[in-house]
Amino acid sequence: MKTLILALSLLLPAAAAPVVDPAAGFCARMAAQHAMKPVSQPSGKPAFEARALKGLGVALFGGSTMVGMQLSSPDDPALIGDPARFADACKLSAGRVGCRISGPAVFEMTVGDHAASTDAAPGEQAEVSMAKNRIRCEER
Image 1: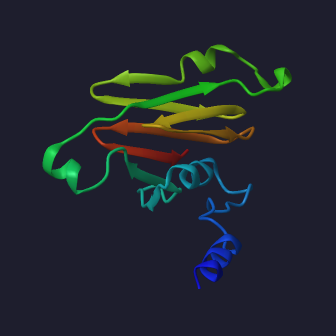
Image 2 (image 1 turned 180 degrees about the vertical axis):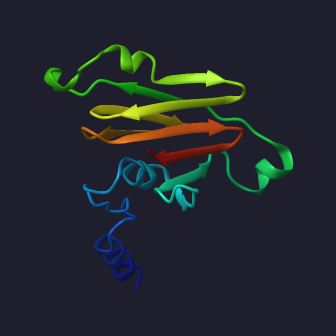
């Protein structure tokens, strides 16, 4: 019986990352990598949100984690355009960090030990921000 269960467990696929249509917007692709949930915004454009720290332990005892955001140039030098836009993309102000994404670019975000990069296609615009415990991505 143990052999049968072991054989069946090997045949079942592991929990795979959600499949996202490559034509989906920047925030939808980023949300799939960071387990973000859709939220509404007044403009009606797509937005996604997640908490950097989760769980009952955080509510009772607090906690901390590291969050890092960076916008970098795409691999193709012909698509770089103005290199200053990458240096000025992320800013810290009054307890909030925000990055304005304007494609083509590569946005990298690290939350704790989970790091993922998301490509922004030419013409895509979004803003990724973190205030208090909430990470938010809004299409522009």
